[in-house]
Amino acid sequence: MSATIRTGATTEMLISGKTPVGLWLSAICLIAALACTALENMVAFDRTVQQLFFKNGEWLVTRAFHAEYKWLLYTGPKVCIGVIGVLFLLLFLASVWPGRLKERLRLWQKPALLVLLSIIFVPLIVSLLKAVTGVYSPVDVLSYGGTHPHIGLLEQLWAYGSTAGGRSFPAGHASGGFALLALYCLPVQDKLKTSLLCLGSFAGWSMGLYQMARGEHFLSHTLTTMFLALAIITFFDWRLRTFKNL
Image (cartoon, rainbow, N blue to C red; front, side, top):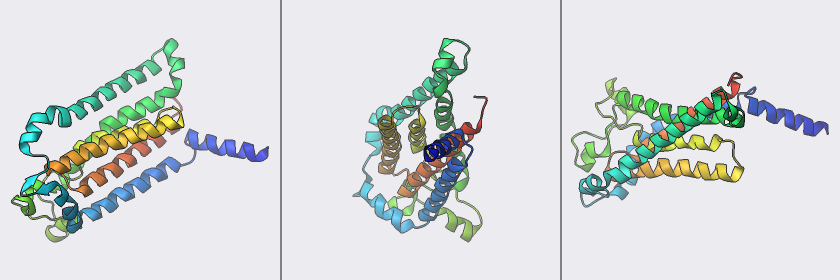
């Protein structure tokens, strides 16, 4: 009986945010993102993978193909993510608005806010990082017909003391998809949680691979974005659990 009580108490502490487990998870994901930044400097690794998308001097997703299907394969997913964000904004507002729905949606209040914050801040933070890292995309480097040498971020800082003029690292397009990993935190059954986790992973990787097939990103760029998204989501999740007034 006492063991059951202790177990229940521990579970309650985890759920209520009294222990920094979520913060540790966020730190681990952030370390993984930094490790991917180191991987980005191993240019041979990125080139080996990128060759799968570059055949006979042309990208797997050609400019003509992208121009024709951009509305579906590029803009479409971004619009869907925006719609999901609006839906969770409405859900959050309904959960705090005085009335009958407020009590019914009480369990959805923090998770809805978490998804909303993730959809906003994951792409925003990635975009800000892209602006300062200065890493060029595959189409810009000499190996794939561009005009710039393929130099990793850390090598740029070490050799030149500054970054170059690219805007490719981390992967921006995939960030919106990986933000949907926050759907895992919704108060639903475990089987559905797994499905939502798979949905977020599929969204992030399908958007990321599409950009890689266009020559817009290397694999390390997308991996870094995934772990950054997880770090941001787990941090928000931990922080929201500590708030008592929501």
